[in-house]
Length: 83
Image (cartoon, rainbow, N blue to C red; front, side):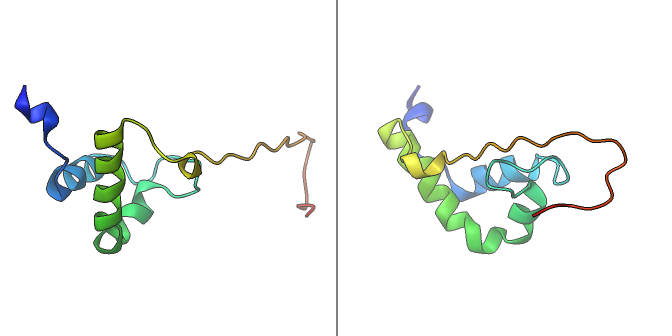
């Protein structure tokens, strides 16, 4: 039971990241696991801090949940993207 009270280690988080397929659809931030794996040396400290703060407090800051909904009309034979 004490194991549930211990913070996540960087190695434990790294193993979980490497278990995820890198080429799957990106998350809400636009990054997939290939990106995370490529820049893991830069991200691992921040990832550990994020997960351990969540573990300690039981919630995440509201900045972790941004979203943007866009309606994309479907047309036959699209030939360009309108910006």
